[in-house]
Image (cartoon, rainbow, N blue to C red):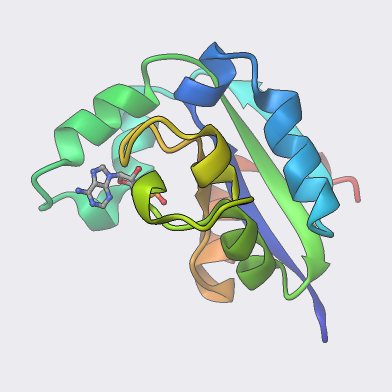
Length: 140
Ligand code: CMP
């Protein structure tokens, strides 16, 4: 299995409840290594750009408002089959449907305040990493 990279966001509901460490611990215990990390306040422009694929969805405005409601932690994660590994430990988008032991089942509040984002493909991982990180910020 190849070592690959994925992109993660610890969302405002998790930073607000001081769960940055708890989320990161679950990622690390799932076999992912945090090779870049920074805590930022996303601008509305950044959130709209990042979630541009969802622009036509009814929840788009609420999603952008939520993602700019407090600090987030953007991370690059590395590990074997990182995209799938991360999505497995994240659990389903709606915490109600997430498996026990996943981040969203254990920590998330709702489908919107669902604690983490993770890339859904290797291709999108690269796009999302490039959206938030310069190459020199990824230190391994
Ligand atoms: P995320 O993986 O960050 O990608 C888009 C986000 O939209 C998703 O997680 C959810 O937190 C959020 N969202 C809010 N409402 C919905 C909804 N009804 N269906 C899907 N995603 C939603």
